[in-house]
Picture 1: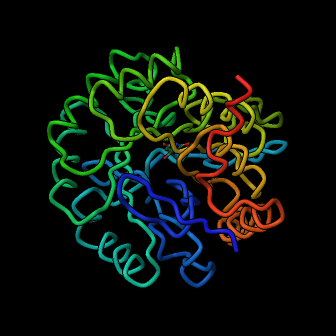
Picture 2: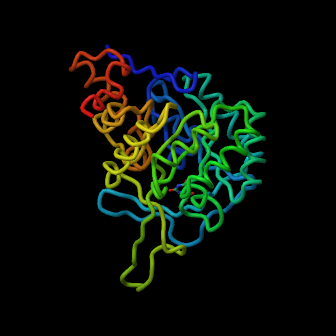
Length: 308
Ligand code: ORO
């Protein structure tokens, strides 16, 4: 039987499949729906220092093979997370081994640093620094476009946070290899990419953009080959682990990212179509490995790069 166990930043996960931020709440909401023993970790909904209601107006819009969102980082705030949601995530970890990841967004460097310092003193396993949210007017993705700005915020957060730090990158980054190198040099322990792709939709009947912010974030199978290209570039640019995400919906999709060199994968939009998507993807990965005589993911991680 194939072994999906995956070591990420010192945590041995049940599988390489992690629930992507914003698609699985804080995990507990999924406990009755999914087999957590097959899920490696949960990245909770993106936090900000203070609680936020998120964006007004339309928040979700389906497109062919994709989903556009404009949630606007609705969340309970870092302190509430530490007091209420994190203990629930840690209970899941105790029961099933699912690693608890806190995704942290922000509107300013000061906010990022204060939030990261609070999480540093908490029992969370990994901090995923979100410098790639496309749906807030101040901060968010603004830090994820230019390598210099990203490097600066990562350096400041690194100094304030003892936890393993995974930086979540935007596909809107001007230059993916340069961005990856900048966050690695600033002290990131891992990289996750990609967040959603800036997109737009027009409501014909209303004759206006669907979203109040006009632009919003596209995810789902439509973006997968582009995300895979960026993960390939990231793996080639840095020596820290790269966690791949973007439109993964099947075990074969996930294995493409592993063969490109990803340490692990995150599953996002697919969870909305099928709440059991993560465990199904893990099962399909194991079935492919069994059929092809592959016992561990290390045997095939990055193997496609031999063609380079
Ligand atoms: N949406 C995304 O697509 N990515 C984020 O990081 C955050 C949001 C949101 O809250 O709108």
